[in-house]
Amino acid sequence: MKLSLTVTPESALRGIALCLLISFFGAATPATAQELGEPWEEAARNIEPKVIAWRRDFHAHPELSNREVRTAGIVAKHLKSLGLEVRTGIAHTGVVALLRGAKPGRTVALRADMDALPVNEQTDLPFKSKVTTQFRGETVGVMHACGHDAHTAMLLGVAEILARKRDTLVGQVLFVFQPAEEGAPEGERGGAALMLEEGAFNLAKPEAVFGLHVIASLPTGVIGYRAGPMMAGSDSFKLEVRGRQTHGSRPWAGVDPIIASAQILMGLQNIVSRQVDITKIPVVLSVGAIKGGIRFNIIPESVEMIGTLRTFDSQVRSDVIERMQQTANHMAAASGASATLTFRQEVSIPPVVNDPDLTARALKSLERVVGNKALQEINLQTTAEDFSFYGQAAPAFFFWMGITPADKNPETVAFNHSPDFYVDESGLGTGVRALLALALDTLSGTYSGD
Image (tube, rainbow, N blue to C red):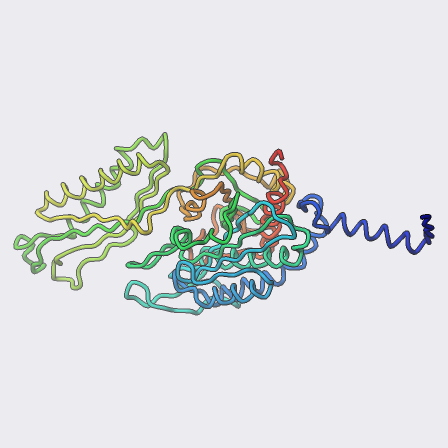
């Protein structure tokens, strides 16, 4: 049989256009961030106003750890509207959603945290938080003083972009919106560890997990990274010193736990300054609150101290905890008092460790987003992040994203957790593009050697 085919200029143009569309958006081969640079860049630019609007809404309505009901509701509703497979109620208020690409392939997870802090906001932003709540028996302000509002908003933007372009994806993306990164309230569990226990990775086990954190100590547009150990492990402790109550005019008739507590407090600092080789690896031991007594002329029965221990090595951690116990016991006994040291195991966090191979590949993706000069290797950080638990379940890479504007000095501005903490919203687009590049390059196998 003989077929005849007539090609007109119009049909030829249509064929060329179809080929271009297939090469750009077809699902026959994995779409990489580099190959689809222009469309993905445009999508990231277009989503920025929406990301900023989300961030401002979350900022004006902050919620403490394990109480992120409104935030989680907004997140889940939007992810469902994008056609993702969504699960809610994980670790109390956590939300996990799976985006399946056009064809099977790798799985990459992207994580954002949602909780705020018991901080009374002092900024002059028009959308500043005016929320108050009860925390440890006191009325406190609530503020997104660590930037989790920005993290949640950026990841929502990434989810929307990828969902709109799912026909170009080979593989799947797991979106993890986590509560209680700042630590669950006393008597409760929460955060990344509980997310994993309750099936955060049950929808799909990722080959790689990525997360970011906005940080005031870097200029807007700069990304900070470190291979291997990056952020410290964190332990929360309570030290109760018990004496014997007496009249303030007759201290010899009782045992003063305030004096004993003061001596113990100084002794704890001697552990770090005199008993640990901090030239090898840093250790930080801080008491954040002391509470004892109610009246000027009554020596109280007991004093309570709460604080944090930051370490980068499990053996060093164990050694310091043992020394803390000995110091507290012996110094209390010298005053006739007793000391009880307890650690909240449910909020103990291991160090954040970035997988070296994944870090090397991630840096190539991030370099295309911000350029080599805006990639900055950072020192060991004594701040902590429970993203570390995801790194125990899969290869992980966590990075910092600067949000201090060019007219401010990152070394002198209010740091995270401050009532004056400020996020330069012009940097949110950088976070969206960075997460997009990491996800797309991981799915496509870019830089992985296969």
